[in-house]
Length: 461
Image 1 (cartoon, helix red, strand yellow):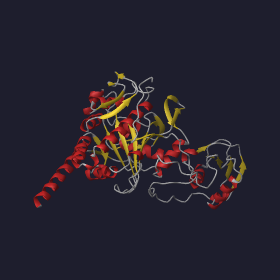
Image 2: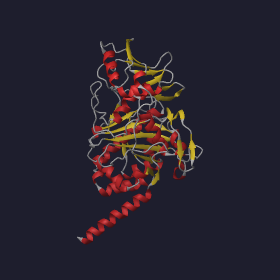
Image 3: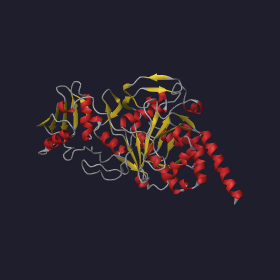
Image 4: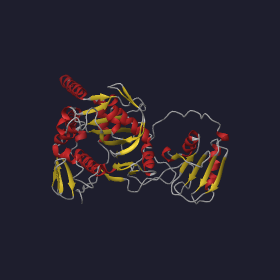
């Protein structure tokens, strides 16, 4: 028994040292914030999974460094959210061409500072200052505090698919895409190695030839991968798990908190009992970017509804909560109390414009705001509108932010407007009851679950 115990300890020690030495590490933030003090074993957990297009080092076979070097662009960005009770997982894809505000970022390698951008392409944040800048950008966009990140390169996909013996994917017609090297027959195909990578990279061979179509390939691949790993019992088989971990970690960069093999095994353990029907794949709601039709921008209020659901750790596969009622799969992470406002609430001009078409709606909100200290609040009936927004004029941005926060209206629905004095809450038909606004998510937000087999459309089909 003593010899067996020593052998087990030596084996575990060997693997922990090996896996730890495989990993590359980088800071979680580029100087903007840090994650909450999260217990990786029991708390809701957010992990940003990034696919880099760098052609540096071992990735030189896929192009020259003129295409992409250094950190590379984050051409794949998926936020994995695990509920505190391990019953629900969401996988949220951010389009590569999404135009968003990018915060000021500090590159720890070069010691360079990059100024904040009012709007920039989301995949360029990592290229500037590393994965921490990508994390900071997503945090600012969603209101989350991401706990960890994983950055994988081209070889990580090839090696993983080879290690698990391939992943089955489906296409509705034959594909022969010279740009990516993808060649598939109509129907089901087992892909691994170069073909697995080509399936994830192909744009010209699928859908409408855009990055948005490529996201569907990524979601189909990951769902199929989850089904195979689950059916093979990989997450309960230590030898299989260590073999996969060894393969992945050779091509992986993570934050310092995820740099421990024990942490990675803890997270794997949390996932082994998840019902695949509760693993949802979604794409951030988008619309064409007003400045360039070849780019996209956040579509509100749908995106705000998704981000609120993620902050509340909700089950995206479940029916939406009743209007203005928050439903949470697990407690949200605690945050520090806001500092008191640097102004007198009682003299701020606040107006409730009632576009809800519900009698007495404005009066109820005026009464609530008065209880929050905004006693100089008036009301009037306005033309009906679908979506609630908060408008402000002049120097009332801070007041508008506090009024919106008191009503639960997301910051994405707060904007400056001409001909508005003070703050105006324009109540829409999405806020007809209660005093806490809950934006409604689109009915078709979830593209698929991991339990569902889907089939990607070939280009032009």
